Amino acid sequence: MATVLTLAGDGIGPEIMTQAIDVLKAVDAKFALNLTLESGLLGGAAIDESGEPLPADTLQKAQAADAVLLGAVGGPKWDTIERSIRPERGLLKIRSELGLFANLRVAKLYPQLANASSIKPEIINGLDLLIVRELTGGIYFGEPRGIRTLENGDQQGYNTMVYSTSEIQRIGKVAFELAQVRAEALGRPAKVCSVDKANVLEVTELWKQTMTDMQQESYTDVALTHMYADNACMQLIKNPKQFDVMVTGNMFGDILSDEAAMLTGSIGMLPSASLDANGKGMYEPCHGSAPDIAGQDLANPLATILSVAMMLRYTFKQEAAAVAIEDAVSAVLDDGLRTADILSADSDTAGLKKVGCREMGEAVLAKLK
Ligand code: IPM
Ligand code: MG
Image 1: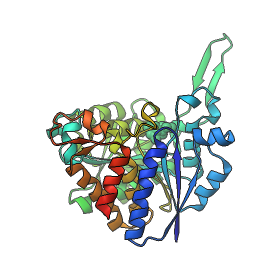
Image 2 (image 1 turned 90 degrees about the horizontal axis):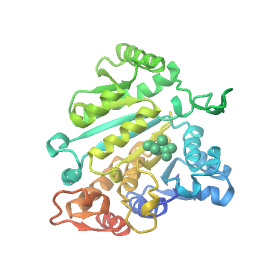
Image 3 (image 1 turned 90 degrees about the vertical axis):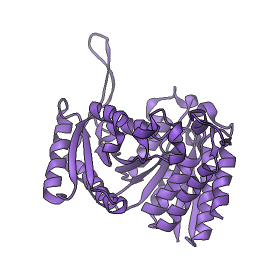
């Protein structure tokens, strides 16, 4: 028996989570997975209750669970409170406390959504790329950090970007190995593009050298290329299909993964997995809490539902259950169901039906029965 902790969080978090939990329960029953579900508070919801974005009780439950499913955190209500206890700090802390250093973000184009992307169909047709983002180091966690007052009275904000060889090696290993697995599954050569800014930053000079050494020592079957982060942004728009696995640090990965998400039409479609060294993981949609549409039944639950699929694949090794969810999502898209985010961008809306969060979730559920 395994335990899944659900943390709905803030904004649209609770409504997308409701749909994802129903899907998780359905596959649990269908594939006899014997999962136990628990819930906890994180982010603004936790601040309102206990004054802290990551209460000890939540951390304890997360440590005890086999996997965590997260909605989203943050919102304007908590934007002005002291920085150290803002909702986002709860998210960063749980990633760090659980040692979830490997963040996997897949940008895969559902052919049904090719018209919903702002990019021409021929550029993105068949797109399937994986961003491996280092998640517990780099400038997000480096010390010293803060805002200080200089002698002349001027204020100065500062952060520190740091990576040690061992941190680079452990994320590099994940990227190279996933490239091998994907090459096998997709029947194409294994390749990794490591993204850095080694022309300016020493920290990424070490990153680049470490990736090169690893490839030469252990992964000669994987083609490794390097790209500066600014060029990578440009290439993602110009010719995204040149990439298979991209590996990069925390901040560049944050930026590139939002960009990659939009190639697929909507960030509302993108799931993610954050893994520790033993396969334990936290799974969450890449989009945020979208406070502007919260509580209105407008949110797209598919990224969270697809995050459940990733959980089944990576933590529970239940490939058939994961594929069943992905097929169900594909089937509702085939039926023409669209939440507002994937409808409004579509250049050809004939045959499409606008649905809310609940109706979309229920449609996926119906396909699983
Ligand atoms: C993400 C988000 C977070 C991040 C925020 C909410 C702290 O943008 O998961 O990409 O920057 O990592
Ligand atoms: Mg982000």
